[in-house]
Amino acid sequence: MEVDKVYLGDCIEIMKKLPGKSIDLIFADPPFNIGVKYDKYNDNLSYEEYYDWSKEWILETCRLLKKHGSIYIAIGDEFAAEINIILKQTGYYFRNWIIWYYTFGQNQRKKFNRSHTHILYFTKDKEKSVFNSDDIRVPSARQLVYKDKRANPKGKIPDDVWQFSRVCGTFKERLGTHPCQMPESLLERIIQVSSNEWDKVLDPFGGTGTTSAVAKRLKRHFITMEISEEYYNLILKRLDGKVAEIKRDVKVESEKQMTLLDMA
Ligand SMILES: C[S@@+](CC[C@H](N)C(=O)[O-])C[C@H]1O[C@@H](n2cnc3c(N)ncnc32)[C@H](O)[C@@H]1O
Image (cartoon, rainbow, N blue to C red; front, side, top):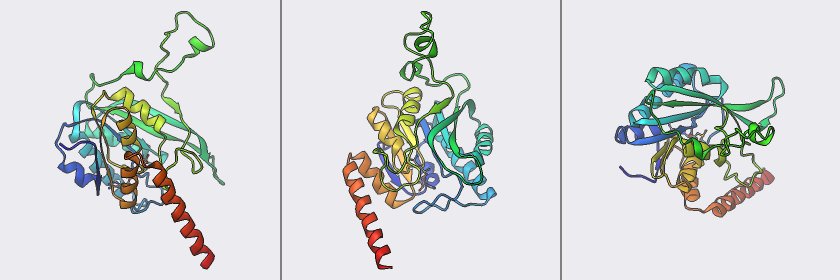
C-alpha cells in the first residue's frame, strides 16, 4: 500500500480501494452539513442524505482500521448524536466524547455564540489500543496550585474538554481561504497519544492537510483524500513546505477579487 500519499477524489471511492486492516489511526473532520461554503462540496444535504452518507464512509473506516486502531471524528452539535450512534452501530467501542472548546467562537445575533466542536473518540477493540499517555501529559493543579508532593511530576492526562484556539483568518498558522482549518496543536495531541512512529494515519477529509502535515512532522505515515482540486493542491504545497507560496497565491487571488469588485 502506498503511503505518504494525497489522493484527489471522493474519499469513499478511494477508501474502498485501500487494503483492509491497514491503518493505525483515523482522524476525520467531515463537513458538518451546516451550509459551510466549500470550493466543491455541497454542505447542505437533507437529513437522510447526510445520515446515509455518514454511515457509508464510517463503515469504510472500520474496514481499513487495524484491530488495535483508533478513530476520532470531529462533528458539530447538529449531528454529534447521530455520528455517535453510527459509530456504535458500526461496531466501534466508545472511549471519550471530547469537547474542543475554542476561544474566538463565531458571534451570533439570535442565539448564544458557538465555541465548541465535539470530537468522538472510539477504538476498534474494547480492551487494547495505543494510548501513549506520557506523550501528552499536561501540568496538574496538584503540581501547580497545591504543590502536592504526591503529584505525578510528569503531569496528568488531559481532561476531556480541550482548549485550543480556532485558526482564525488573521492567524499566522492560517493557510489559504479554506473555511475550516484545524489547529495543529489539536492534531498533535491525537496523533501522539493514539499512534506510534511510522504508524499509518488516515484522514478522509483532507481540507488544508492539517492531519497529514502533523503526522509527517511527528514521523508517522499519512494518507489523505480531498475532493476539491484547489484544496488538494494546497495540501501538496503544505506538505512540501511551500507555505510562503500558498500565502502568496491567496494574496494574488484576493487582489484579483478586489479588482473585479472595483470594475463592477
Ligand atoms: C471540515 S473540512 C476538513 C478540514 C481539515 N480538517 C483541515 O484542518 O484543514 C472537510 C473537507 O472535506 C472535503 N470533502 C467533502 N466531501 C468529500 C469527499 N467525499 N471526499 C473527500 N473530501 C471531501 C471538503 O472539500 C473539505 O475540504
